[in-house]
Image (cartoon, rainbow over all chains, first blue to last red; front, side, top):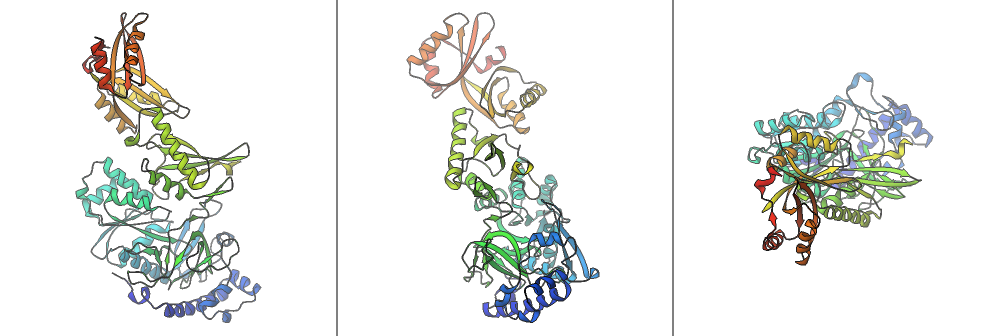
Length: 433
Length: 142
């Protein structure tokens, strides 16, 4: 099923024309309504009339997270306050949070892209969807909620946490779909076993998971635990929230809703545009956004784009699962390390579960990485030599993948904090000194 | 002949062992024998308890990684050369011991708990030499 066949299956040339028109109107809006952008464009000698087609996109300046912080809270809004109907904010790990605003039309557009996303996952008006993303300042809960209502599904706005209640409603209401972070999905799956709930009473068929990086191995694990098909949804509040792109049933990358969010891949160091298929930083221009239209917003996410037609019939470009957010990327002794790589190693070994914590510290001016891994009862041997052998294997696999020697610390099951929202995978103690 | 031993993975954290013994006390489970294999980060606690299945269940429910392992309990005379004679029999039969721990029980006897690659062999050899073996039912009486 395709929610909006006209826009999702458009001829590429026709789509580019539409994008061009939308960009042109957008640049006009920001030039006249956002002093920050007017100054920026004037400094570069660009006038609204210079942007006519999608090929002119590259002439525009980038916007970074720092620009959002500098203009905190409402400096980048392009409409008067009274037109703003919703505010969301992301928790700022460094300094102030990032604030985003929405007009009524923005909310409608957001609902539309989430409706398309849910349809991709096979969710329809006859489904009961449990929205276990956090409701509140975080865009996950309300974003999924409005899209699910738009397609006419029955929404359970349970929000994140309260695991026992989640399982109870899942069983009693017969939820057929669930939306949450992948780490919470895995946690729910484990809790299902712990609570000894009969899987026959669970009717879930689709899971819409996103807001944090996850791996194919984790997908397999969640699918097995919850007995559903797991779909990857991507989004970021600066662009709109969840629903920027979504996996179709071919699960061959996430289709970006390009009629609204125009993607580019750039070299993160030079800013130079890269062709389809090359790895680089993902940049979005949300061309139809009214409240906060950002020019070429740098996501810090590293991925590739593919434009080959998809078997599902959609012509929208597909993005690969992000290699990592450059915010998540750790540089340890000069080696780039993404938590997702470590997770892959652990899951491939099939001897541990994806509960781990990376602790980075500096000893004698040298970065040290400790990986805490929970000992699973089924793999627990009561002989020291066997456990030491497991540690050696993890160490060797990490070393061969990353070229980095990490110390492996085995910890008791359940001791690494489970998150109800985004999983905390990294403890970087180097920043404290 | 085979005794059920309880093995528990324990991180080296202050108070962790006390938590465990507290849980066992709460459930009226008696510890007959006890040993810890320690490394820098963690230890493996091995115990002979009165109700191993129940003990495993209550510890699991409290988040411990628990395993029940088969071991052999060998009873040797509590006097010079008692242990030596028993070990001589085992090594003469080319049996490798993975680990063992021992404790004196009373004035004249000591019990040795042994984990080896082949418990059947060890039991056979010891019986051939008329060594006394601990029965699961004896565990309370140690």
